[in-house]
Image 1: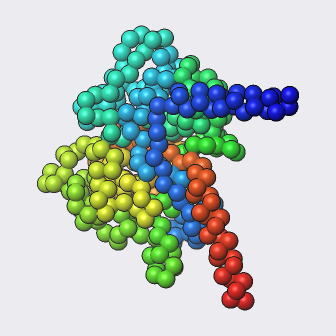
Image 2 (image 1 turned 180 degrees about the horizontal axis):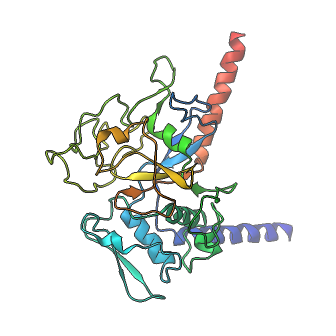
Image 3 (image 1 turned 45 degrees about the horizontal axis):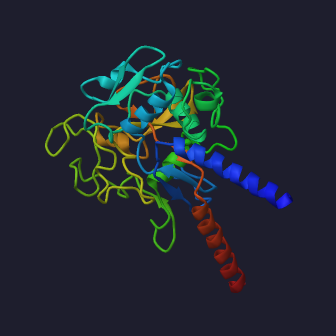
Length: 327
């Protein structure tokens, strides 16, 4: 009898898990960030004492459209902006009326980064991911609780990440480490930071397909996409960070969780800025976390995959054994 009951519970749990997975339509490819307890860079940023994952790419127009179609048939908290259809962006159009809105991605734009998103839009996307990508109104079950307790908030800087968050907007240190840190930069396992997130002291340029390049404005249109977004990862050929992230320099500015006065931090520069704004030394913020513009997007961080944790723990055990043998 007990065995039967236990089997029924396991089956029920499996059905629940399947139901959540079946509703998921957005897959975020992440990379593990290890090398625990690294020191800060000379800028005062980058130290992180725990393992986490971060999205390999910026959140795309296609992924954000899936989010809108799931939770914004009645767009209570203005997750959609009509500016997402402007000529520079050519991203997402809204159809229908409130209560039955639908969202369509412009041809060829789905793999470009989403822009015209506020910090609160990014937080609601994170909640949606945390909650298993459920469809419905913008409520506690979908966008208002989970990684962040928003409950209708659309301004201010008093919201912070909840314990147990599965997806979230990276802290400034998490974002910075993923972009610039290299545990072997000094040789022989000595960690350090690169000035640019392409594992380089300088940038070779902004031509797609050329190593150590990024999407930024250099004053001309030679070899450049022409004042426009590029597909995420288009500059990935030997232009990624040590951990394998793309576009942490250029393409779009990215929100982070830092509170700077009455705003939240952004980093990384964009397609309409010069190369100096892509550097680790440049820290930036906009007028407030509700701000949106044509070159501002985000990527998410997440809990590490079980396999990553096993590798990290195994590495720590091996290091401890070797240390004891030396003694």
